[in-house]
Image 1 (cartoon, rainbow, N blue to C red):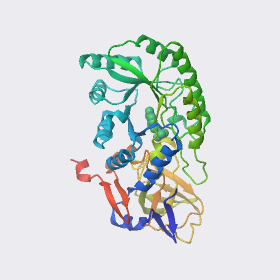
Image 2: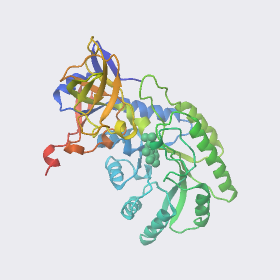
Image 3: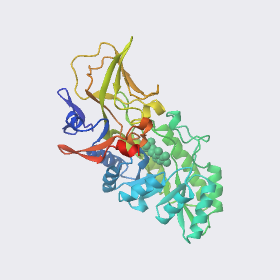
Image 4: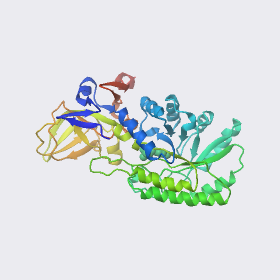
Length: 411
Ligand SMILES: *Cc1c(COP(=O)(O)O)cnc(C)c1O
């Protein structure tokens, strides 16, 4: 489903003219379609129907409270990576028994809070962390259910900066070590190790790395079975990729579902997924205004009022987001154009095009697929206020997080 389309020369999102919203709000701002979000969640759910997994949305990809409330309504749980995200997920109404907590560096304060809220699983990433939880559980006289994040030593064939499953990555615990930990703690009075989790990276478009991971886990679970150790929850993480441009292929979710279904026939674990990007990326546009069109010898720079602080992915990982004109001019630029932001960093640039429809200063454009790691990764660099978040609401719109006020930034 694609809710972004031109009617004549005007860009529409759902059934609303983007220009109409742009004219009434300070740019840049994020513009969401909750209809797209609902579609994504239901599509994911349907694709994995035979497995009936618990879907724990990766909150780090989008931290808007209304976005999370919408997901809660659809039946989603949450994967959180900090006490802040945990509190946000609870505030959105997500049941603690649908929340898993990941991350290599959870502090005592964070662990203690997670224990007190009785979340489903704390996915631990080191023996030191497990010992910390045992201490907390003992002092609170509680039994805490935890998971162990495995490092399956698999290359996710994605951008190096978003790979997390190689043994040289900081994430997870090796199989050998995990085996020892499970044996050592099988009768522990304060913790029950009920889950195993993996998350090998992000924006993975091929099935092969997921298949390899399932093979590794399959062998490991069989080894555990021989020792009389059973695992109730298997958390397969997120990482499913999306097409960032029309030329890219889609990730084959159904094929992945078939693999997981076949795998779980032998194990009968409760399967958990932690999709972030797959759920949220295509739910939002970032709307921006053209400040200047600056000509140099071989190209025009289109200088936008959106910058790397509003959308960090291009500067951080060299990611490419398509930029669409909100009103398509019939005439084209007669030379190459490069979209850039106003910040004094050479990495504050976005994308280059040939034959792009002409843009005027004061005209609008929008970045696509920015609902994941867009606003949630933005910063106040250059004392720039964080952009507003707006959701389309039938023929109109609702502001779901106002633009940060400059006076709050400089007090
Ligand atoms: C980031 C992250 C996710 C979500 O990754 P996506 O690529 O957005 O699906 C899931 N689980 C863990 C542990 C993560 O760190």
